[in-house]
Length: 481
Image (cartoon, rainbow, N blue to C red; front, side, top):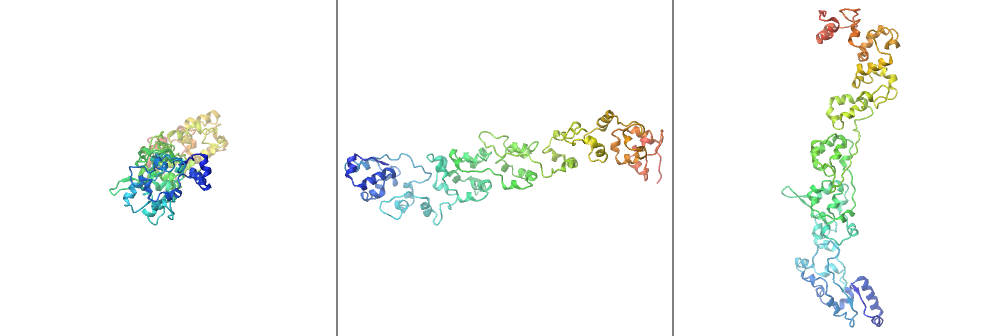
């Protein structure tokens, strides 16, 4: 309310104290203590709406003009409020007086120390002192907010700054509340086993706030029960991973948790979270949203990292694990991932691929002979190895004599039997079986026996007689034991 003084002469004739009061009233609105001697009756003399909800809570301009007519007192320009105050307090004076049967009067909330005519705005602590004696405002609990406060979306006159000054409930200050505890508070259990939405959440929050994290917001009843309001975004929030995700083994164990409770994953994740690592989502992952959309949050983003089992040595030793459990590999890998290394052009002897190190060509004979790597995993010995050796002029002939690959070791012919037994794979890179039977055949040629010391022909014949046929034909000698 503002005061308008009727004429400068009136101000000069009045005492200085009146001038000070008039100036203060222009800033602080109506001063009850100044008018106290004029209104010996109750507050309802001017504020009829306190007792009768059908009437205005504010006095009519004609009531003020009864004195402020320019002669008895300076005129004032008084325009009663036509809309509720900028507050989210749920309170109707007339209903409150009826419910308390007039046991609570105006002075109980609006007068402190009972000084005559001095009126103050009521405070939350005064409400709590009657409704929850002995407890503070924030100690009442998160289930009672809606008893005294309207939902944020229904209070349009509050500014974002007003909303930002809302006090933080004690429950919200507990570590981990933002990621874990708030869901249990928002959805309350019913006696019949169902759930209900906690209406108190709407006091401070709106859908806009929840949608910053929840990609499944349109499917969550507790979020849909809230109205939409951009002002709720003034509340600070941080998108952090749950504590379970910080466990070192989570990357390898999360499948069990995802299949047991897929709805929890759907809060933050969409299917791209799975396909970032997995070739295809597990069947349970179909419950996730396919992709973020305009009415949903982006959700958690996943960075593909190596499992803890994929150490530096795993590159050379992964073959046994891949053979034993190919399904485990297929979770993350497709055939193209294997072929990136396991194909001739990427494992060329010149070291051009990403499997063999640079200059591997110069030392690959020793690596092949010692079986540091298994050449046949990627290479066809007759097509890849032999063709390269022939081009280099070091291909083997049909015998061990003459200019050939074995010139580097003197008298290799004498000891080639031991070399063949130790690394027959190296021999087949250049030789076929017919090269051996030129000398080692019982049916012709030089008829050298390929059997070394301790050879147990009877045992081998029982296991696989076809091996004997290569040199002996069908006339396999019978060994009596």
